[in-house]
Image 1 (cartoon, rainbow, N blue to C red):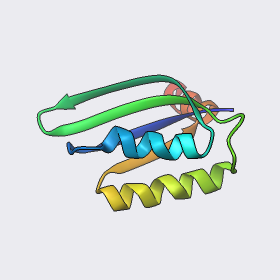
Image 2: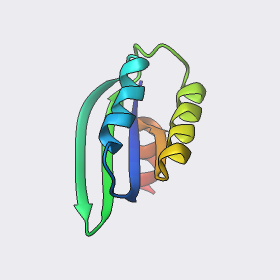
Image 3: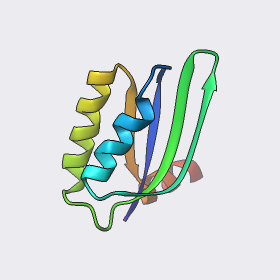
Image 4: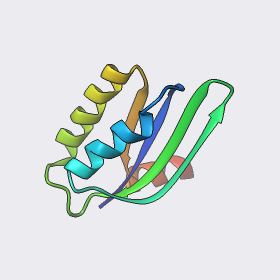
Length: 89
C-alpha cells in the first residue's frame, strides 16, 4: 500500500529530519518527495510505501499527528487510493 504525506507549517530547522526519522523508525520507504518554501512557510508532499511498515495505518497516522503537534506543523497521511479518488471528483 502507498500513501501521501503532506506537511505545511512555518519554516524551522529540522522539519524534514523529524518526519523522516519517524518513517525510518517504522520501516516506511519514501518513493518520491517534493518540498518548497513559500515566504516563511514550508510545504512538503511525499509518496511513501507502507507495505513493509512495522505498524498499522492507524498507528502511523497517530504517530504523525503527535509529531505535528510537537513541531507546530500540520501533517496529514492519506492512502493513495483515497487521495486519487478525491482528485478525480
